[in-house]
Image 1 (cartoon, helix red, strand yellow):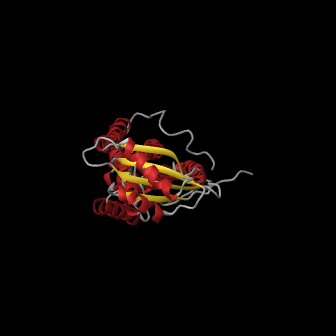
Image 2 (cartoon, helix red, strand yellow; image 1 turned 90 degrees about the vertical axis):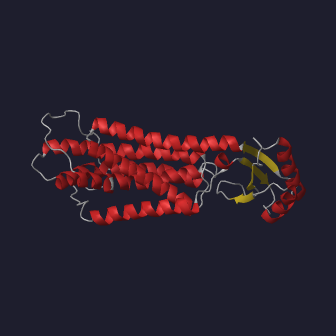
Image 3 (tube, one colour; image 1 turned 135 degrees about the vertical axis):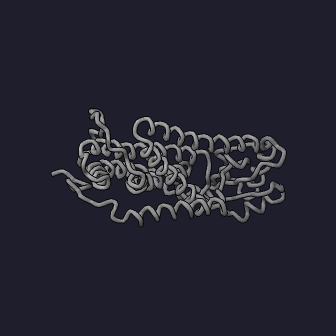
Length: 322
């Protein structure tokens, strides 16, 4: 007896509450944009420029004492964060000390880093410094521009690819879904002020690829059914296509989430931001493939006078039992 995540031959009407689901998506995108413009992002050292020193000690972290020891060095904005992780030993106490790059300096001087380490050792002689990361202001500014260009170019490439493979209505639906996913991810990071660094940019690009893959599978089946059911209304064809690929969609999303949740819990703080962004991206990416891209397609309509059948259309894995 096989376990099925989705029953066979489902007949769910995904457009029954189309106005509600699409309205929620639009409101969420607007709120995410407002949060980004008002609150901004908590840029990491990669984008702001500065130094992050990771400390480790057998004694509990005393943030107040650490700050008091560093304050006389007059380094400007200093952030001290204690890190908790279930994989740490009971006598392993970890913290991150971040301080901004000094104005006009291309990088934080080695002497400055040594002064910070010496100041912390006066508080806790057993403290060690497993890693030090430093980025200059000029480099961080270039990273911001490169990151924005990478995301924009990825979306432009997606638009061009879908446009060539399908019709322009499909392309706009796919890009709308991608914009939805990226905006909601940025909004979440803005609201909760989760550190935003290069790893998150990598996660955003991965989310774009994942969401596109899911959307293309649904679109492939839609195109095949549009040729198969030439006299059926567009809404009915879209519903049939989504239901036929639902098993595949759910199975892919659930198995991906199981791996991501394991990494989120056990992977450690170093990759936690990346994994969190990926987990959120899989959830909103699956949602947007069904409720955003297809709603755009239904609203725009699709040309139905395709005379030549496409033997390669559709996805042979769409009806895998899950």
